[in-house]
Length: 371
Image (cartoon, rainbow, N blue to C red; front, side, top):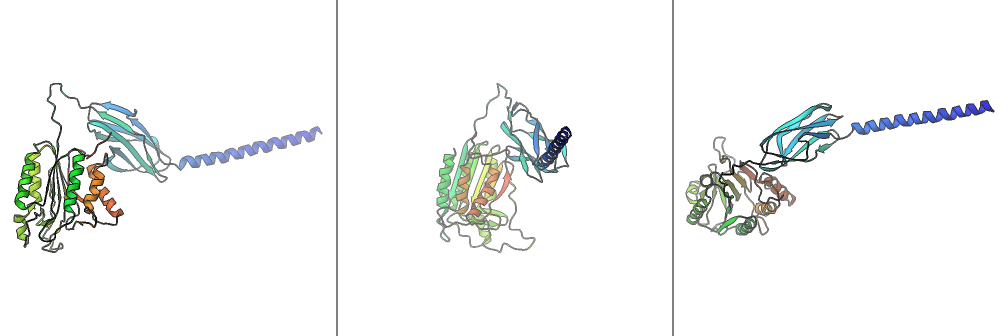
């Protein structure tokens, strides 16, 4: 009996231990697989604190990306925009290699994020907020706040090819801009002389360091590389008549840059950009479009690309303006994001009229800024 008891006990113990060992190996293998097949892990090294306040504009941010799999790309985002572009990744590391980025902070709040991607997925880091305090001399004169000044021009009542929506668009833009803090000069259906006088008076109000905005809806022409506003009394029979009977975009840009030299100049053009006198496709040395090349501080957004027409639409407002007003009323929408947002909205409605822009500003611009 004693021998039988010992034999049974030994078999029971041996079976139990073997079963446990098998389960342990299986669990270890399962855990190892789950660890290796995960998106990257991002650990901040500088700044370590979530919120930091500095008095210098130049900072260097550092982070470590942990990934058992190959890191394909990584990117530092500064206030929602890429800083330094998309970087290609590197082979597997366990924080043996840092990523760094040198940034110039904007006055006030700066939000930083890092995104990293491997074959499993993408990880976004924790938010880091750096507040840049600009030191000011106590005796320095504080500059006056920038005024928001807008000129809205809308022409519909042409003798030939009258348009339905420009006046509706102009009145809508006037209301929206006033709600956004602009002092608006609104004019509709102007002949050339009144158009020239109106623009001249508006330029005189800019005073060198303000936010100046010109919005135009109506017939537009592109001749010899320049865009032209067409007054309601203009009906140029020949291409050579356009420069004398219409108002040049180059002239408008030059006037705004001279009058508002240290300010922000914005132009929104809801008009066609084609040449009705000749085919768009001409000889290789006969250019019908040349870039405006505005100085830094001037930004132009067109309803359509060079050589294309802008659709008046079948609704109360034109395609471009109906989408534009949706987005300028949303908080924290960057000016540079507007063309893509407008294009996306039009495509969702079944239209393919992609906006076009030229120029750049000295910083960011938001129609509506919310903390």
